[in-house]
Length: 626
Image 1 (cartoon, rainbow, N blue to C red):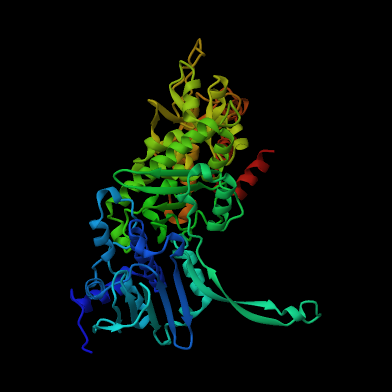
Image 2: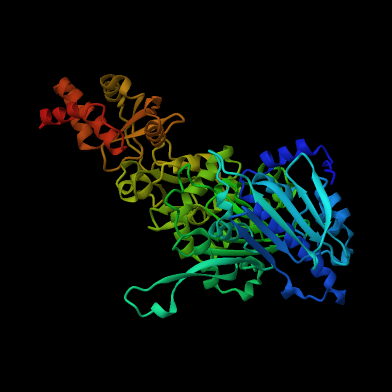
């Protein structure tokens, strides 16, 4: 029997397919099972109008058989089968797809027939694990059966054989083990069972295999030392009906919760379940979950974002990052679309127009659901924000602020007046008529910000202040710049946009005192000014220029050698007794006045949460003045 050569430059194409399109050898079983499902689909469709088929949907199945001694794995189906021309065209030509041609031939009225394989290289993925593949097949309506056999890119043979019923069986003879690769794993029943569950759980026909189990022998059941025996029974390995393919009204929330826990291996229930089905330019179903808590590794490099991507119930990708924008990376779930080719690489997916459309739609859907939760389920939204609010803030800061318009309404900050989390919209709606800015203050926590001297004037005016307690907060507000045409203003700014209510009958020239303090402190401060915001405190620090104290602390914690330093402006409350004492000492005891200046500066550093340059020197200074 003469060996035939593959068409389409098979040797090069087969090598490219095995080494580039598929990155994991285990994928071969998914491909072979998907092809079997396609073959059954075709005969199932024909049976709708042809009584001679003699089978209904419940009769179709896919059978897996493992023979460890022969080192073979067989995948058999009772689908439409192939004749000699099919073997030549579909298996003799790599990258030809009989499934795709079948679908093209269908009437437009019958477009709902779902065919998985539409690229034509899936069958050849088996050569990643096989040293020889045998295909025994008989096409429905034909009297002759054929055996197709190949050991790889060197060619194939076709001969006639005896076979009773239509269908195809693919016998994969595994490669011998090497020092680097073990192919025995694909002959283990639990490994096969796991691969079916992972990739082909939602194939619509039962995938059957004989499973060997262990049980107590009946006659020793009541014995103190029971004996065990192995037994074999045929089991269905797949669940067949994906939960996301069922109608939403037919699935309970408990079922969604249980699916979420099992699929993503977590004991927590999802905070929000999003079910969506879209038909049109691109057709897909999505089942999405917003977790109730961040995984332990969420803010690490180890965390993998992305949704599980399926094509007609067959897993294409475990974590498809392209389906989620970075600011919604916390979402878990599944997307299933028949418009996506099953045999497709990650590189090809990145440029797939259907995938881009799906990703855009999903982003809008998630945003709308979050807005709805914020408006109608405030308690759960605040739980969500506690878990993932930082991610939304990172989303605003990243990519030069290009996502700020879509995310800003989802932000929340603790309010000085409401004593709870509020949105920016709620803040602006409460602003006083004369108020120019949206005020915010930064600190480690709300209690620390409550005592900041810089906020005294704002509080005395009854202005609401947003508390920024996370390292990303100030960067977020700087990226936003404005909200509803209102600018953001830090309580630490030298100009709060507030007109003073007090008018001194006689202006006093305090320039001499301010100059004295500046000369005493030297380069420690860039400027010393009279404060317009302090009420009961003697001193505070404000930052000058584009770098704030919070930025200084953040960058120095991330990169200690960065040398990042904000320009320090020392503000003095000239009406405070401590400052008046320093002013008196300038005339009476200049050295003591210098100590007062150093002491006030150190206190301003502590209030601002900045480290003392020399703690020991500070304690000696305090002791010398006691």
